[in-house]
Length: 275
Image (cartoon, rainbow, N blue to C red):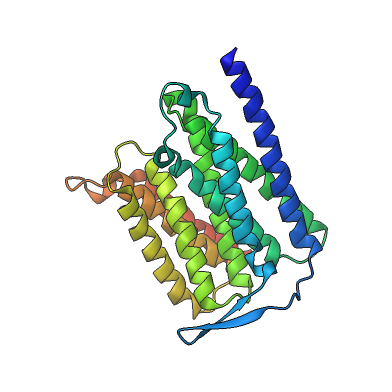
C-alpha cells in the first residue's frame, strides 16, 4: 500500500516537473532574441547579462529542484534517511542536459526544425530523469539498461552542445566554461557508474581539463562543427573510459573500450569530412 502511494506521488511530481520544463523551453521560442542586455566589466572582460541569456541556467536549476522533489519519493528512503550527497551524482545530468538543450534551442533558428529539436531533447531529459530515479538504488543487472541510456544520452547531448557552440557567436570564455562544466558532469557520471573507480571527481576534472584545452586549441583552427564535436566527444569518452579502468600493471592493449572508441571517432571524422 505504501509503495503504491509513493508510486502515485512519483508520477504526479514527475508530470508536474516535466510540464514546467516544457513551459520554460517554449519561452525560449516566444521571447524576442534582441532583448536589451546590460554589459558588465569583470577583470577587463565584457559580459552581457540579460534575462534571455539566463534562461538556460534558470531551467537547469528548475530541473535540479524538480529532480530532488521527484527523487525524494523513492522507496529507498523508507529504509534509510534521505541523503543529499547520495542523491548528488543523480542530479548532475538533469542539470547539464537541461542547460545543454536550452543553449542549443537558443542558438537554433526559429523554424519547424526548432520544435523537432525541442521534442527530441525534451524526451531525452525526461528519460534521463526516469533513469536517474531508478539508479538511486543500484539493482545490478536490472539497472544495466538505464546505465547504458544515461551514458549514451549524456554523451549525445555533449556532442550536440559542442556543435552548437562551434556554430554560435557566444564569447570564447563563456564557451569554454560551458564545455568544461558539461564535460566534467558527463565524465563524472560515466566514472560513477563504474563500480571500481576511485577518485572519480579528480579523474573527471582531469578528463574535462584535457578536453577543454583541446577545444581552446581547435578554436583558432578552421574545423567544421561536426568534426569539432566528434573529436571532443570521442576524446572525452575515451579518456573517461580509460581512467575508469586504469591500473598500473595493465598494458595499453588491455583497454579495448577506449581504443575502440578512439578508432570509431577517427573513422566518423573521416567519413563526415568526405560526405
